[in-house]
Image 1 (tube, rainbow, N blue to C red):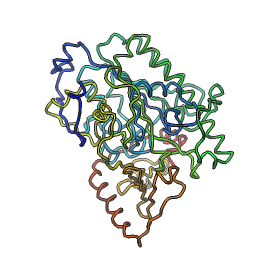
Image 2 (cartoon, rainbow, N blue to C red):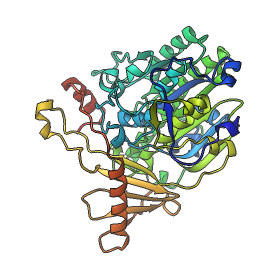
Image 3 (cartoon, rainbow, N blue to C red):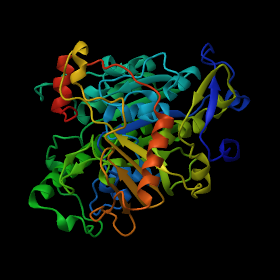
Image 4 (cartoon, helix red, strand yellow):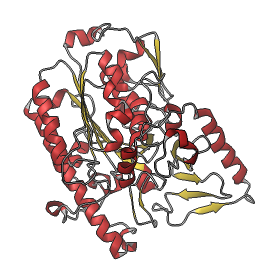
Length: 471
């Protein structure tokens, strides 16, 4: 099977018929087996990789996620394309950068007639019954149009624990997802996307998870925390423990229905979070490792060997082609509509438990809008038609961040300075300056393809502002 799924290490282009009936053109192997693996995609908003015990954190914040990693593959150095919820999820679904699919900020959707096909649409063509359970305003269907890509789209964000009802807690999400699973457990193939928002600001102190067990020595960065940062980290860590519990309940229900051995489970984050270590709290406009390095874990019993760790740099752009190659690899043989990924399938790396040829992984941050204005008054908006607010790239352990318009860029050697406290600043007098800037500009120009209109109302803007996405 692995031989059949193994890929070349280049960007992937495949074809799928838009008019094809869901069960048409299935492979002989699939017809004989009677079904494909189910797919469960779990995305946890604002979840840092380095605060999970399976990624080396000194506290046992995430026993359920750790167990998932031990039973499957863990990508040690996975990076988000953009530290913003809506655009990042679009990149996960399309395998394309934000400037390619067009959703550079929250409140902007990829149109239904976009040339970029999302992997949930591919699964639908192969007969999957799908459901999504989203937990925050940036992902509601009216803003994203993601609801049209699923058979069932649950976005019930109306619990009275919030003034603006901008999100819902894990304790409200898992029961909805479990109920749908109970009703559809006998479907031939199901695809569920369950989104949790809890580690996102505001961080609540979840008392039951506020004193996790120590399982190692704290990093050098912890010793630099002020009391304010330390308290914020404690609340954030307790939110991880809280959401981990409800992820565990969801996975337990798959087990109770006897679906575990037939389900591909994928857990990832859209971005991380700054907790004050570098003088800022949040994400959105920052490209530190704490913000762009995210967890990515996959489990498929009988196909993915337990305990695999992929150590080379990967991107959330790689998630879509990897999922499809694991569950519907024959999608490459379809015709009529081109499906193109900027990411790489990681199936071969998983199978061989080895790295692929090193490549440069890019990420961007856009400025967003300064509050809400009507569309006819949009000249007040920050212009997103030029270069991004920030651009970053990493190759091996060498990371470069550039703020266009500044006469400096920063280079980080993540071996010598893993917490990015001592960057090397390069100015116009350095021979590398023009080369690096030209490299960034060429890359961005080659990917800057789509622009789409905002679908925000005044209320949407107020809610997104409360979540820190609008200045």
